[in-house]
Length: 68
Picture (cartoon, rainbow, N blue to C red):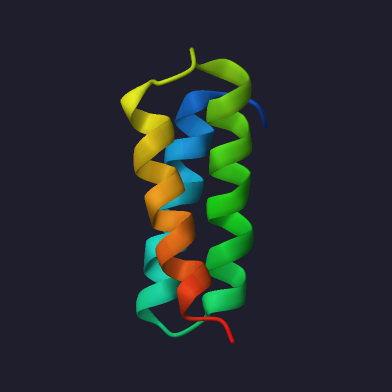
């Protein structure tokens, strides 16, 4: 966020990577929040159908399945 701002694709990649770490640590709620932020940034900054959007959506959906 400090280097690129809150709406930059590089920030979204960092959020997504951190979400995967939190998921691995069992913090599914934190992982869901960060992966949701990544999805929102990519949808805002990348063209529809961009592969990164699909990747982070799959990650988001996978994490969401672990929250009951």
